[in-house]
Length: 249
Image (tube, rainbow, N blue to C red; front, top):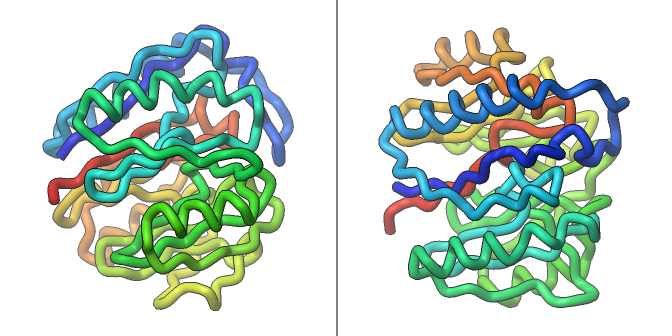
């Protein structure tokens, strides 16, 4: 099990915000939180691979948006925010170094990895401010997977509103996405409670800002791995977007 991560840019505080008000970023605290996040991955068996830093790109720590991986195929995205496209060369180099086949989303398509949720052989794709219909069409053609477009409301990415637990149920904020598009739904009442990353077995990564959801995960038989990513949440980041996980075939 391998994980791609990218250290925070010194210009992190200049990162984009769309649906929230800008607040001050403590870059030293952000670096410490990122290190703790990577240590949590390592502690659960994930081998870390560092993507070349992109210090001129404030949002580059959110590496998930640049790559979507299906088995040995890496789809290099085309972010909906043009200022983020400078993050792509380093992501491509990292994917190639791991022996992945790399294909590209081409203009006029746009696609952010944060809008792509894989559950089994089905791919849910958020259709909103960062991912357009042509990007969805291209991803479907490149992967051959069944895709389900999901219209987004006032939220940055699909995985800012819904993710899946290892048992196949979905943690959902229904005021941001149509819950009826998903299977068995568990409605959460904490915004960061719908952002989880299955780490293998019963372990599930979740933000410290969702304590009630973490308690629910315990009740459901899961092992919540709690990380503080508060500085990244100020930029609409969540636990999913700080890594790209490559599962063993």
